[in-house]
Amino acid sequence: MKAAWCSTIPGGVRLVVQLTPGAKKQEVVGVVDGSLKLKLQARPIEGKANEALIKFLATALSVPRACITITSGLTNRRKLIDIQSGELTQANIEKTLLG
Image (tube, rainbow, N blue to C red; front, side):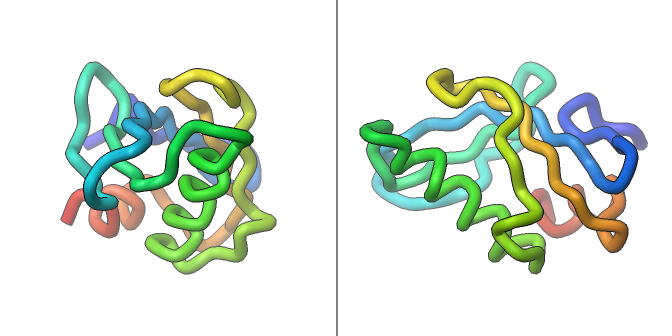
C-alpha cells in the first residue's frame, strides 16, 4: 500500500513528517493527516529539534546522518525530508518506523 507520507524520489525516498518537539519521550506516534507523526525530546531552539530528528531517523533506518536532508520546513513542525539511499524502499521504511 502506498503511503502519502512516504514516496520514492530519484536516489532515495521522501518523508513528510509532523514533529512534536519537547515531548517526554521519543516515539513514532503513527500516520496523521498524511504525515508521519513523531515526538522528540529536543526543544525547538537553535535547530536542536531538527538535529534530533535527523539523528533519530538515521538510527532507526540505519543510514548515515549525511544521507538525510530536511528540504522544507526547517522552522515548521511539518517537514519534508529526503533520504538518499538506494537501500531504502517505501515498504521497509513503513515496516521499520510503523512496525
